Image (cartoon, rainbow, N blue to C red; front, side):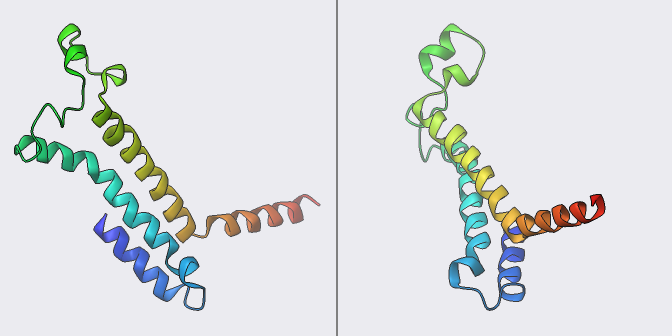
Length: 122
């Protein structure tokens, strides 16, 4: 993630020199926030394992659900589990996708492909 963010910052300075601030650094901002969101659940695990954030407050699964079934699935997630596992992780991957596609300038490239396709077909 660090290497990706360094690359995004490099692209902001090299590829998008004369653009307004957010258009210049937008992909970098998206990937930085994405890195923190994706790593949030891992950090929760580390804090729980080192007793910095002790259980039961940091448990990913509800205790009553874990006692009745031996399966740990989405139905048994606690509020902390929903926030870290679902919200942070999935939002992080969405932000990472948006940031990298924006950096790759995918929309304009797809428009060019569409125009070339129309030329070939006519």
